[in-house]
View 1 (spheres, rainbow, N blue to C red):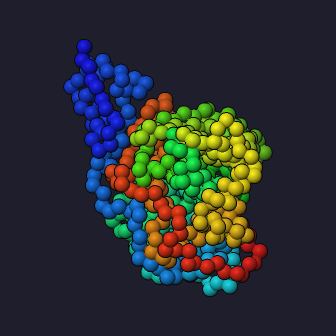
View 2 (cartoon, rainbow, N blue to C red):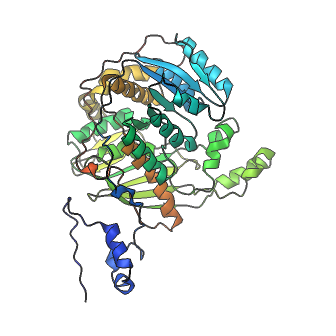
View 3 (cartoon, rainbow, N blue to C red):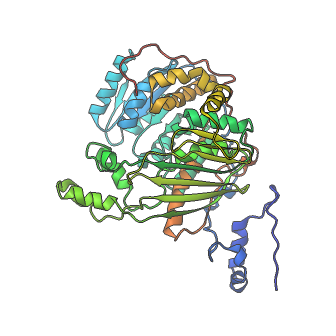
Length: 489
């Protein structure tokens, strides 16, 4: 009997599993069928695109772009998140909001009023279906900030970088693997930052636990869990006055997987040094059937003909559960459900060799054994291990607002990095990788939860990339305006 022995313990000479399986499958069918240890569930891994075998153009991890003393911002998309962003960014010194874009002129007018209340100059206006292109071409802009519908994130960010701008995109940054690669390759070629605005990485407990991980209090993190469990069905997804043109509802039709993975995923990926010492290797994903969305469409259509086109559509399953395994043998579970009546949760669970942390259900909890520590002990950990950014800007962030302050911490930190020529906390590889979990989850669900290999968007640089700096060294020079109209987010 033929016996094959594999050693996956060494890093630099790891066997390329995809190439090996491909070689076995060509002209060796009988051999392949006799090797069940090489397959998952009776079929080989999904073969990912070969672009990760190409050479990296330039490593954007740790890249420090030239300093920008005054960051001139163009905001594209002034709906829910965009209008709030204009208010938050207006508080930050060293910022000029010089351009506003939306296809609905009334939203531009509302944003102009916000600037006026903040004693900021009126911004240039861009509108129409492709007004965003003209804004990206404007030579008087340093940063394009885009909270638009998901389908526009990659096109806008790529066009902005090609026109010499740094770019910040709301989540997810991409909807396909080709778009993920386009973000990576454009950022590397232009040397422009591409940051996905994952605000949950800046929430207070997430920052505390990340700093505790960095200081070794949980030991080696071996498993983590994150989620976006938030019932948006009646209040937002099926709300005619919610997302423009019902775009969020349309995103839930004809797609099945984790459509929105990064809120829960981003913070735990940072804790596990993904793209900075470890990488995602493969994932499996499974969804329930839809048990509520079509029923809700039917209910609403009985009273309002507006909803009749949304009846009997192929809605995604309510709950999606995706499990990712890393190169170093660690695991993550990421869940998504925005249409079941349950309390809000991002889970945020870290399990290490020395301790554990959990945020949901509240209250926040930490353990170093079989029992959760007492409230006073948790307070002491906050006092000792909250990172410098919380101690520097956290109180002001809570006052300004934005999901309890985490939005403002994210915005302030991004601007401070650009003004001081520091690497951003989140780079294009994070944007592609975290968004890629959603893309690959759809592939896995569509193939009966088949295992899908994960592309390496860093093209090998994950082995030497360093975790982002949490010290504020070289920065923290950006002030916050004292003007405080009634704009608290």
